[in-house]
Image (cartoon, rainbow, N blue to C red; front, top):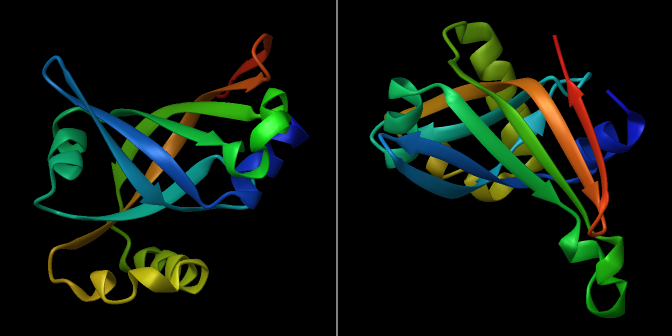
Length: 145
């Protein structure tokens, strides 16, 4: 994975998560953390939420991570938009789940109250491909194993 892509994933901490139910797409603003090589992206959701139900029925997801906050006004031509395609995976390993939850709450303390719900699920997106768009026409695509 090229360094620019890893840099965006590591420096940013929110994304748009797109899921689908039947023919209907659904987008959610999400907080996240990633593993060291940025091939796993971790998030939390309530089990009964529309996004979680969608992922349980169709594990294909897409994420949008961008730099628009860093490039307002005349700097808009510098915006980078990263589309991540991957697969949802329920986190069954309790030890990993707790480790990831601690990491998420450390980076996103505003989720603390939310994280105490009995309905909370920690999940990961296994990254399958990335597409980086820099400005309006410079694109880079990489399929990952």
